[in-house]
Amino acid sequence: MSEFESDVSPELSTPAAPRKRPKPGERRVQILQALATMLEQPGSERITTSALAARLEVSEAALYRHFASKAQMFEGLIEFIEQTVFTLVNQIAERETDPAQRTRKLVIMLLQFAEKNPGMTRVMAGDALVFENERLQERMNQFFDKLESSLKQNLRDAAGADGAATPTVQAQVQASVIVAFMMGRLQRFSRSGFKRLPTEHLDASLAVVLG
Image 1 (cartoon, one colour):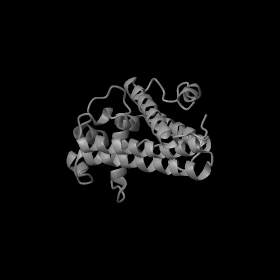
Image 2 (cartoon, rainbow, N blue to C red):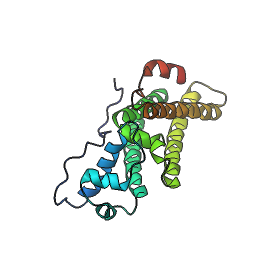
Image 3 (cartoon, rainbow, N blue to C red):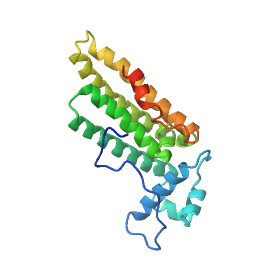
Image 4 (cartoon, one colour):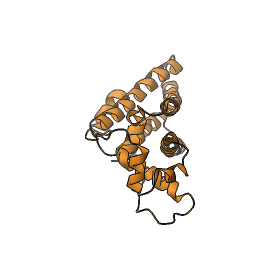
């Protein structure tokens, strides 16, 4: 169903069994993989460092040798989201000359990324950040602001090509509506226990949202 194939894998793989002596940096990756996997459990409550350590069969002190705090662990997940999504946004911009198609493919890419990474969706939707440090939610807000800016550029180009009288204003309105649509799909996916897929009836939905 994908309309855009990427050279970048949009999934954080399931953690392998921990090694007795992980290579440098490997334990950090294992911790983030375990956290993402725990977030994929529907209805899971706030994840504690104690539960995370138990899953990895290490002490909490071992976690803090790699991350100064749980907030820093979540920041690691957010960095993965940012790097993956905006790498794909840039690839779409490079490969697609039609601004309307760039917009469409950007929306599809984000929703497919969320569908393949349920744990990450809980972070993007903010559900996993409710009881965490406020700066994490602020960073996710910035993530969506940046996405909206990318959409505005595409939509402004498309409106200008169509001869719109006020392409900038039109693009601002459309971009905000599209971001609200994407965030709504992520929240519904997360809060339905991952039953209501982000890409559900996607073509029909995009026909309404994108016009």
